[in-house]
Image (cartoon, rainbow, N blue to C red):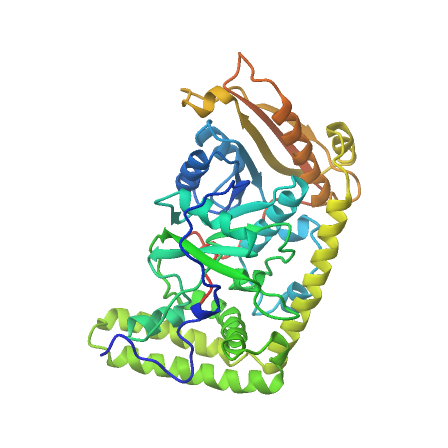
Length: 464
């Protein structure tokens, strides 16, 4: 079978929507590297090496198999580090989003926390006045850390710049199957490796598969100015789990259907009921075509073909539950949420930086369990050599107010700590400056168990 089969029911590439840029030889300052993680701390080694090479802070957001304390004790002490244990989104008091309410409690609700982690990192970036940050996933290898700096240098003219993903292609189960069966299937940029201008890009990551797609989308108009430069490597994973394929389908439908409009030069507002009715028909025909291609491909072994077919059937089953009304309603909710998120960010940026004690006192009433975070600044001498061991960790516990503790005050505490540590003189008795705190959130009883996603991609690159 030819390796470039195309179909009228699917666009195998959207790369022409990226702005054309010449290969950049210029580098620019990276304010921070941000990594959402749910895997063991060893998965942070690549991001740690990149932060060390670029001499920028590393922000790690932990849950499941990963925790902030272990990151502090295990990661290279020559880098500046902010490590946060992230609880359930409902316990953080983030803005109530219509896109989440629309899917809450139903079959389309996403059961991972990567969007929550990235949104928390965006708030922190605004509070610390970071302008240009790089999002990395914990299963991405960075052969040339300078490529991250090159991507940041292009943010003068673009709201986001993704790096090309090499290694294992990063697509949905349906698009993976299309490629494996001989289809012409490309990839797009995604938050697995993406530089973002925080000040200019005031959107958020919705809790849906392809959340990074919608992050670079202006729901009232179209795609923001985005480009691609450099290259990173994606680790291999198994895309053909039926549960995974089903969970991806709604986000994949919305993403592909929206970019279908962009390919035709149309805005998001052209996605009316008529568009989605037609697109859902195309999507069904496309998956059925991929099923047929898999079944007839001489290159796909029988056992693997059966696994792929099971995943595709799960996608078809979930597709049957997606209505044109739901698609229209979700994109309308997204436009509303983006405006709400912008107002939230504007309110945060209008606030002055409070003294550390004032931030602490705002949390020092009531009771509850803990949100733990660590802030560590490496002494100048440590940037040139690796000491044999971490210095002593000083920990304090702050009890929450009787009213729910908002992430605003939690992150204000981090901001104040970071500012103090930046001004602190290096200690001759400690290898680094480290502060750790446990901030209580009323009613928090620990993170609820979810379906295991330890081998799931913590985010998915935009699918084409």
